[in-house]
Length: 254
Ligand code: NAD
Image 1 (cartoon, rainbow, N blue to C red):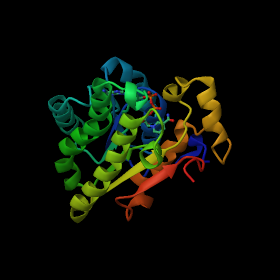
Image 2 (image 1 turned 90 degrees about the horizontal axis):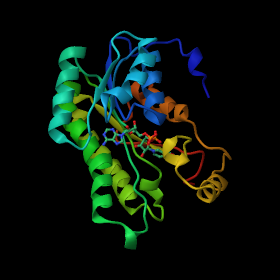
Image 3 (image 1 turned 90 degrees about the vertical axis):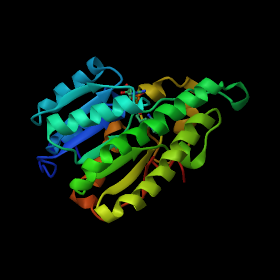
Image 4 (image 1 turned 45 degrees about the horizontal axis):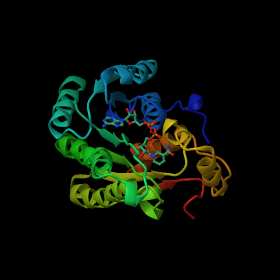
């Protein structure tokens, strides 16, 4: 894959992007990649202090990167944050809904709280940002990229809450794509497979070994493998693609 060091075209110069869950992992890689492409990135994490490292790294490549803190499941706080970004960063061209959590447990042992929290962060959190961003995105024929998961397509034992949230994101992506197509806003999802981040580091050795054994390309994905797909959908190449789910999984879901 392309080495980010060699990304010298800046098709996103002058654009403003929001990336949620930008403190680490996939969100960090996405924010940095968009900054290298010229975007001014609003890096969002649960706490502002957690997003400052990513915003600092982005600032080496673009002017005006900022760190923000919000719980994505809080509808009112998300609306306020998006309003601040639009006002203080000069509009909004791209929204990347990446924040997500797992609370894995077999169905019979899963608590209602763990079901609700995962739906609240992964699905409602994405809806909150889409709703708050749509008016601004319609003004500039902007883009939305939602990070879902192959688990939303193929399911996974112990992840009924997570799979439901991610399948919901895919359905929401298609619906919003149809709603906003007339305004020139492209809305897509990316479904990563087994990516090397803190989220998958939490899996035990056996689960990691089993998962890796089922990846035809015989390696875990990197956060930048996912960031490259966001880059494609956010840039000039993605202008005639909407309502799709791009699977970035080394063949895991085949
Ligand atoms: P991670 O745990 O390393 O990072 C998650 C990010 O989301 C962090 O920045 C965290 O602060 C943020 N976050 C969590 N809850 C939040 C909340 N309530 N409000 C605001 N921010 C919140 O995870 P990752 O592996 O980088 O995953 C990023 C996205 O990719 C998630 O949506 C995840 O479901 C998805 N994904 C990951 C994998 C994988 O293998 N790692 C596979 C498929 C999909």
